Image (tube, rainbow over all chains, first blue to last red; front, side, top):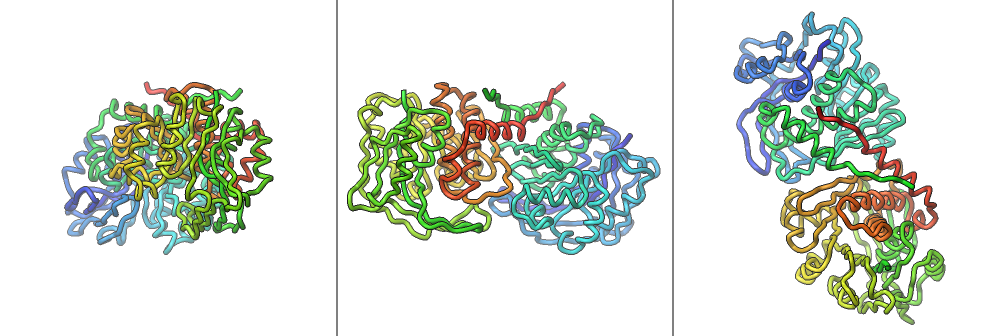
Length: 307
Length: 307
């Protein structure tokens, strides 16, 4: 039993209305693994970095018990770098710079001891690279979750659609759901996307929460109204990490349990946005997480008896 | 015991991406009263119309048991008219035409038998007119709910702030909460607005649901994800009508009961947006309402035991 996380481990430089960072550690797989490890501790990470990467962060991942056998370190090369600036509403951003570096020819290699992982989280990457990982698995995982973005819908849609046939859960945001389906109504969009392959669709709406759909049911998890949203980077990945981490812990992939899982995912995302980068995710205690989840319970819990 | 509803009864001409109407019946008080009457049947309406107004609609209100003694009909004058066009996302709209007509010098007169109403809903109107109504009450109602909009924040802010000192619940949308408080974070905005007077603030976020705040607590009610959103006009008023109607029915103005009330309000709003104008609100059955509320329960209900 293990959870395999595939995605970027990278440097980001972020500007928000509240401040600005130099190069800090980011990347989908970093957030996913750090969020998932609050729930589950047999995590393998597959990614690629250059030899310029922060050794302290790698030590942190190892200390947290995350297996880095699948992390390729390319001598003399530089790590993937992204720089972006968020607008005042924090819901939209401009990309200022993207340097693919090691990511340009990333050929993921799943370590032998991770090929039978029962839970597979394919973080946002070139769809062909995600498929490459899928094909290396020695048996079909119990649950495959895939995250992607509008960029791949623009330039690699047919590859992405091949992936959709192979997975269980797709996580995208609301505008991506509209783009992928050609439907404005998220209810109709979900129906169309589920016909493309995934049994379950998670539509992430940022500060407006997340919707969970299967063919016949829908569930809504709110985002926690926060006093300060500092930096939204990594929120979606932390969400995905909490989601799959909780499912791996409970080994229950029913729709009912996925409802709980997206509440835990939302809780992890709410920590991430309170500080820059992965900072807030690293030092949480189990009590912090439990208390945050209790805030979600309080936020939406009501008692109506229909007579 | 009664519920007094004050607001416009008007004509609207609406254009959405899905169609276009000629003059149809609208107005805040129309939606509020029609939504409230599913819960409570001693409703007085105070408003003003011209003698051009649709007699069938007045007959419908009467048939529904809504007391129209406070509805002034101005001979030889025309009813308030608003025309607007919604953008593709249905969250924003342009006003194409506003003809105040009878509303220009509206002097509301609360009938004697409504002056002791225990529930008072002040629909969106000139703040001074709302205050005029408040001053006519023979005793302080058990609950005063006030709805307003950005327009009055622009041109009559000091009058509006006087009103805020006198009321229990304020309902505004998210951008209005930001404008009124000068805070981007809705949590901070709510704290500042509650300091202005209202004990409770409802922030309406349209398709993203609604937040209910008091000084120390917060509750979130989602909007129902709908296959078709046809016309958002009147959604906020239907919401307010369901909210105060449910509170009047149950006579319980605790925060716990307000949580239930905003779920019922959200259910009424979800009916309104499915068709143009008041059409969908008129012919509902109690079963329709109960089933819709059950959809809200299913949408957000989850069961987490934190060990």
